Length: 389
Image (cartoon, rainbow, N blue to C red):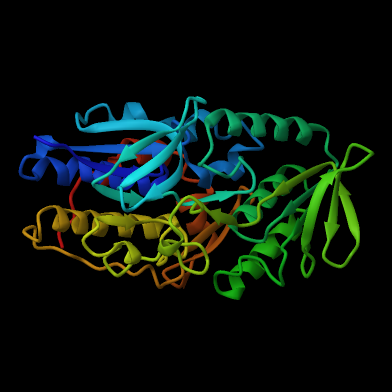
């Protein structure tokens, strides 16, 4: 009996979610189910619950790294059809249905055959503090350096007016806003520009109350060590400034450089159809994309939670030649949803376009940054039940 190999690239929210869902609810129910196996490929052997990083990074006593950085393989021990490979994906050959992998261990590159492929490689941040797509020791090293510098830093500059930048500025402002210079460069004209303007305005108000300086209209073009041991930052108006500690929390870059260019759209995302099949691969190729890497995505965990069951149903439909009956569509979350803690007492945000009062946002996210969800995410508790379509 030949083996049908389902390969999932990426071990963050989307990759873990679809892997658990398929192993729990789809593969065991297929005819000749024993002939299927799922291979999860990720550069890190740990899942990193990135949303809690802004609170964890400055204060180990509030959230420990081990709480939000959990080993992946043990969470899949109960599945006999599972294999984990710690490696970087370097190329995909659609004609041969092969992926070139570079093991993190430094061993020679290998090729991995796929019969079905799910691309869930997401996006990476400029700093390993915020990125789940690097080995654990890279995050530990970056975290140690950050905490060491924070102790003596008097002037702290944060780049990025999105959620991570605002949350990080809030955490540092709460502890140090009255004793250190904490400065946030938004890089645009407002904070939290992805949602309605009043959310960012309220966040800026809270930051200023803690002593954080918010700078709009200037971008940090480049940074590097100065002769005085400080970080020199070159600004978009031609001037420069310096910082004892510089944190780059600006956006993310899609992890798609290894994929066939024909699969990507103009911003480097994998172009998918309404059923999350990769358009250029062809409807019968059994190649899919989910999470931040997919063209439908505007980013966010809630969107992944909606997409995973839909994709699993489509994969089941394809593996059963339509006999499963369900072929749902998913085209992304249209309503605005974002919760951003600002310090340890205030939260701003919207849920499905509705304004969230600070106390409610605090109870949902601000109190703990949902750090307990790290364990639930890696062990698949979210996917205990199969969704009907």
